[in-house]
Image (cartoon, rainbow, N blue to C red; front, side, top):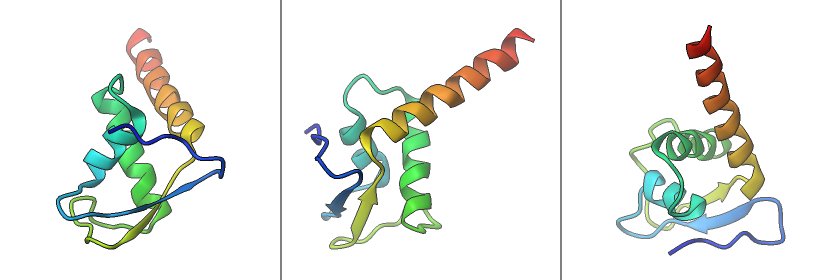
Length: 88
């Protein structure tokens, strides 16, 4: 399911058994997100929550998720940098 943005800048998500940062990021970004956007958002979640191993989160752990527009801006910026690099 797609996680709706809340009124507060960052959302708190409680990890459930079987969750992964990649799954959470995919749900938050929605079905149109590409691999690069999901990876970028996973990194943002990890950085925001001081997670050193993105493949290890625990059920019951509470994660702060970046505000909806933050991940889109960063993903777009990363993609643009990649495009610029290829054009040179």
